[in-house]
Length: 220
Image 1 (cartoon, helix red, strand yellow):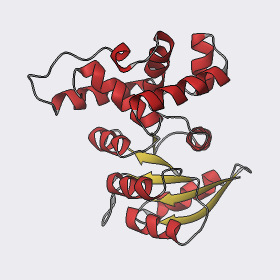
Image 2 (image 1 turned 60 degrees about the horizontal axis):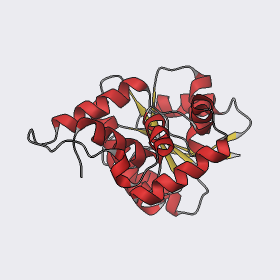
Image 3 (image 1 turned 120 degrees about the horizontal axis):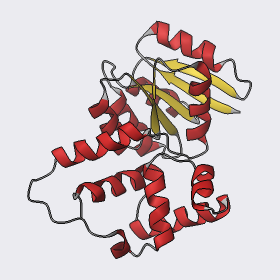
C-alpha cells in the first residue's frame, strides 16, 4: 500500500484528488494539508507517508519550500509536484530541492495514479520538455563567462554509467533505461548506485540536475 499525503490550498483540488486516488486499491490517502508547513507537521506526527502530492503555489509555505523542508527532514519520502503550464521556473526550483518530478493538474486520473507509483518506486518523473527548460533556466542563471563543461568521464564514470546518467535526465525509469540500453534492471540499479557514489549525490533528481548543468556548461 502506498500512503499519500495531498497538499493543496484549493479544497476542490484536494477533494478531487482524493476521489481519483481512491480508484486504486493499492494507494491510500492518509491526509490532506493546505500548505507545505502543514504537510511537514502532519508527517512529524508519525503518520506513514510515502508520497506527498504537493501543489506548487500556496500561501504560507509554497511547494518549493515545502519540498525542501520535507526532503531535508525525511529524504525517503517522495514529493510529486502538482503544477500548471506556467510554473516552469518553480518546477526547476522544486526539483533542485529534491522533488521526484511533476504532474500537470489537468492530466487523466490514470496518469496521476501511475505518477504516484513511479516516484514511490524511486524513479524520476520529468518530461522531455521540462528537461530542456531545466537546461535553459540553469544557463540563464549562470555567469556568461563560464568554463567549458567538464566531460563526465572526468568524474570517473564509465561509458555505460554516462549513458545511464543521460537516460535518467530524460526521466526514464530503470525498466525503460534497461530496455533502451539492452541491460537488465539489476545492472541499471548497480550502475545508479555507482554513479551516486562517484558523484557524491543523494538521488536520481540530483543526477538529472548534475547532468543538465554539465550540458549547459555550468557547475563545477
